[in-house]
Amino acid sequence: MPLERTIPSKDELREMVLSWQINEAVELALRDSDVLLMLLDMVGHGDEDTKVRALLALGEVLKKGDDRTKLLVMNNGFGTIVSALESGSPRLVTKALRVLSVLVDGFPLRKDEFLYLVDVLVSLISDPKMEFASIEMANLVTKLTTSHPSPAIRSKISWLVSHENPRLKGMGLRLLLNVFVFTGDSKSVLTLLEEASDLLLGDGDDLLRDFVLDVLLEALHAELPGESIKSLPRLLSRVKKLAVQSDDFLIRSKAKKLQGRIEEILASYYRSRPDEAKNVLHRLVLEGEYEMAMDLAISLGDEFLLRWLSKTLKHEGIEDFTPRIQVVGGSSEGSPAVLEFSPPAPSSEFIEEEPPSGEVGEVSELPPMEKLVDDGDIAAIADVLRARPEGVSELESFLRSRDAERRSNTLWALSKLVSRLNNGELEILNPLIPVLFEVIESGNPWERNKAAKILAFLASRGGRRDVLESFLSFLEERPLSALEFFGYYFIYAWDEEAVSQVLKFLKDALTNPQLQFPALMVLDAITMWGIRPEIDRSIFEPILQGLLKSDDEEVRKIAARIMERFKTA
Image (cartoon, rainbow, N blue to C red):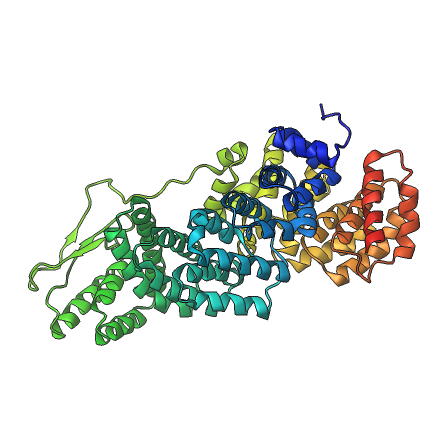
């Protein structure tokens, strides 16, 4: 049963959060935006205890709310929350960082908001007294991105990447990954790999090394431009050293995982380009980078290249490189996978060691997609799709299933997954677009709504303009489906051309009983961005005045919210 209660006054709400009735305050804020606005006001005013408790409640509201909740907080309280970072209070700073991490997760910031938050974080990271909040700052930066990369944002990130403070450089690399690398910007990829390599062997900052390893692991899950491959041998040598030398087990484990990924990329690229591989090895030898050359040859596992490098090094006077090959699984006809090398006498014979019968290399086992979907394990689904994008075909089969529960579980999981994936990763889900268009025509309102949200994400943040164009054409043909889509789409993106077309349709839709509520939700989403010139108040204000007398309480509430925006514009 929903909580039956009138809206509390500001003083009552303050007493509620101070007496640890936070769950009740959270439920009220989720039900009524006025309560949420009071919470935001409490974050900016009052004593420290009040602000801390209000931030705790706000964090829970954001975790349980949807993107509309986030947009309301962004428009009405973003500056207030960020200002708490400048308070100097450890409690306020920590709580505000956690709230911001939830707020920006899957929710790209606009240019001014992004730059403002980055500037404040730079001050915090540069302040030795804020060391206590390092983990919270790292978590926030990991989720921070922007919807519209601009020259000002590129300039700010470039400044960070070139900064002499290692932690600010690390912050810049993560933002470079979040904002530009996933768009396929080859120059950004190359910069990230080269600069990250320099940070791995710095002095004593294990938190930074762990942070940079995560950046690299994520970056190397994407397809690399060809020109970026040349930076991998240097990175490989540094990662291998870290995997052996670090005193931290977690760092050694991540470094070994990254080493495997780099070797996999190098092998995939150079095995079909043996002459190019030979030239790279020769260049490394001439430059005196013997260890890099050894690491690269070993990672490729090509017998010819290994023998050639051994002779070349001997010619150069390097007498201590004799590779030892160990074949791990795979076809006996393919190149062996080299795990290590040892330096016995130069005259030692080149030996191939066959594994015992039936023994294969370790392969991390991925959980069945069916179980992950049924368990609602969104993080694991994202990891599986990053490692094995073809797994999306299983999700497609679930959406086509006659099992209603399986379809519902899959749609729910996808509706959460789209906000977890980075913009560049959303293309993994593109094969689902045809079946999602089928679900849009479902007689099940819940399924139709979830499909609309997923497609809106793919259109706005995944760059699928064709999806947007399809729904614009649906306005006349399938208005209900189109309105449900645009109710989400305009939360995620402002598109003047699309807004103009949809507003023309809304005038009549708002007076059609069958379309009235979804049409009102679309107008609500559009006006969240402010009352722009495209919105003709003279058309919509009379309609909204009529809706304020509706028998439907939800319709009255939304109409009143939009009218308030008109009044305060």
